[in-house]
Image 1 (spheres, rainbow, N blue to C red):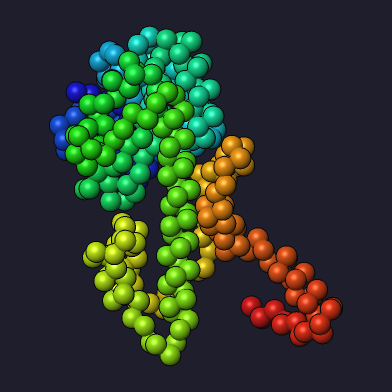
Image 2 (image 1 turned 30 degrees about the horizontal axis):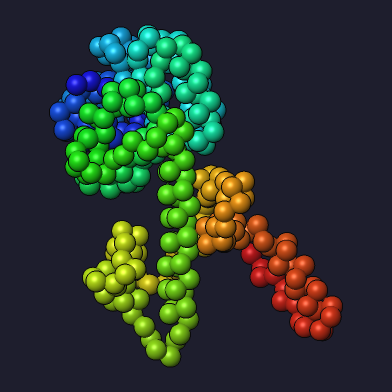
Length: 305
């Protein structure tokens, strides 16, 4: 059982390692020599310096998993691979692509006789040991070529992966998954912040979150991770209060609007991330000036840097 892996960032490299450890042979490629070198000594993985060499190393019908940043980088990689692969081969996009891009890509690859599967992948840095959650989209006769590798990547062959539906559905489900994640993270952060602010109780957030992990209806993997880092300190003084958003939360909010489906929790969680990035600074200044204007309330000066 052989597969090609294009993109050896942290996630791609670990996915290649997991499949190799489960018995697959992996032909790997990354444009970065350091990334190729880091994985070259792994048993079952052969790193190639050129895409042509990777394609030549795979038996037909070939299966190539692309694990690159969404957008133009993935687009260029798919277009290049489409010229190198043959009819009946299968391309998988495992990045967090917009599902609309995935539907478009499936159409033009199908016109060239190539199969396409959009794969939403969750599991982060823990996936190498614990397995990945995989959400696959594509035609059934195409996805069947990917299933043997999904069973290696998932926590178990019979769970942790699903064929969601036609092309685009895998990335659509992953998009919603990430929107839910935004909401869960925001709820935990707000609740813990309230307990932290109740200074007269002197609450031990590490002990409370650890207790919640056992039997509570709010237990989750996110809670497990939160409890773990709170054990190492609860002040978080060295952490900047800036939370990035990588795109899926925005797409989820836009999709909710287009569908006319209310999604206030996920949308507000996205707005909270924008606020953490300083995007509400000017608006907050305007609010302070309005308050000063109508009520004579003092305006706080900026802190010297």
